[in-house]
Image 1 (cartoon, rainbow, N blue to C red):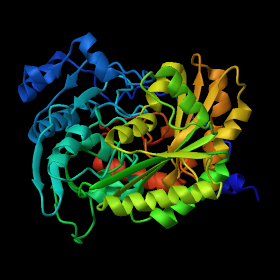
Image 2 (tube, rainbow, N blue to C red; image 1 turned 135 degrees about the vertical axis):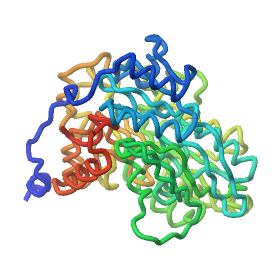
Image 3 (cartoon, rainbow, N blue to C red; image 1 turned 180 degrees about the vertical axis):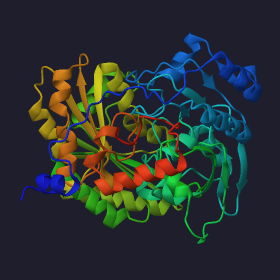
Length: 491
């Protein structure tokens, strides 16, 4: 039996297509001056934004793809203020969208209609850090890069690194269960987050800022909030276990003449660099070409032109040992003809230069044209095949297709770039990309979340029973549905 048909029959997704359009739920109240006056009493005039021009940053995602029509943004500074806001909104049936750094790519952090924006940008304090246990406690609005800088001074690091680290908030990272380039080494936030504080839709505060690594006392409630995208509660503080800052960091970039050879490099890297391997990033020649064309600060890493490139990073505690391992590894894969060329960073400047390539693909793509972005997980054998199939489906004159991502954990970022938005092109991409993931037992969202973009495509990755369970949880936590409506769950 065809695997997609089997999957579709099992999970009820055969030829099922949802509309991407949403309709404002009439159960929600419309904002009045009386409401605004009440909010002023809670957060003060400095915590209220009503100016239409200033609201643009809260209403629009950074890619410019999603745009809401909120007439109010609230900026609390304490958990108690968040509690009072949500309690009042719940009693008045006012819909709310929690917002961190607004760096998401699936429309999860901006209003769909006129929902009130609850911005966490002023809740940006680091509360404590224990140098012995390595546990950091902070408010949810702290920018990820600021946490990294703070920890670096303490000889620690964050178990998470993203291209948007200069803007994204740790609360948003936890709410979306962000992955990033260190996932291969440090794993999911489900493992790193030890505790959190969250405000429920009715205003009750769930204080669970546990800093213990072992706490086996019943249901572990924090896991329901990690990855829930602000639909069950608003995360106001987190406790996160942070690893020691590596004393030795090495980065190499190699080029391969086939995708099969990139798989061989990954296998050999696991076998030969296992205990120090921290990142294994993949990118194709076309996305590198776009970056070199759009960004004068980017430099071609190799002399040879290759169809595929791999960036490998190691973290360790002994630079002599690590240098020897990565040099021997590079020599081996070059001698065996698995890679065509390679380079190793000799100092911190070169390390940053190589990472600059990987971290700036998104910006280069954004400057190239309108982009259809897909963040998926796939088994290794199908990782790049999706890119090839998408190239076959689209005429080169109408679209440029590129692929890059976290190959070490099976996460592909598929990007289709066009001159302008086109329904005809979108119809060639969707639902094919989701059907492909379902057919090969992949995930339609590896790390970006579901948001508004994929809510009606959730059935490609979750069974009817699982979606029903998610609805039950949502109804239990948020019976009036005020938190981040139209997101995550299908209509």
